[in-house]
Length: 114
Image (cartoon, rainbow, N blue to C red; front, side, top):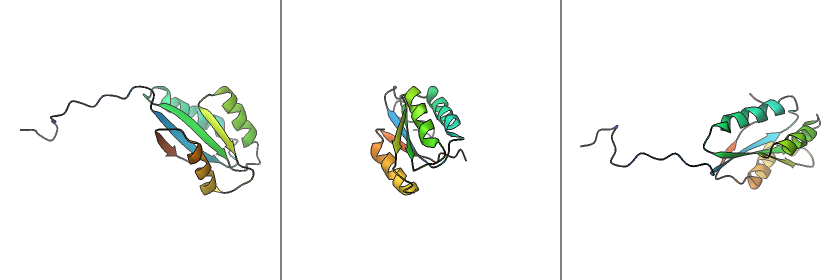
């Protein structure tokens, strides 16, 4: 007889590296936090069994976010940037990011570190 803690199935194995998690984040005037945000997400996945990509969607920022995102993407192969031609709003930015995400799983989060 099995108790709640016992199972007749073998324990699940830890997935090998290769599964991709996409993190989609709309960005509007967040130049002050983008470097920190990128570092925190990368750090969170550093010891993970999952690969990751960060899909930033610049939603018409006017504070230098667009240029900084391009700089970050130039040195971090996990970062991909989509630039919208103007501010279309969070939902449109999310749709653009979701369409570009390649992950086996997708996480949507805000880019303001709050």
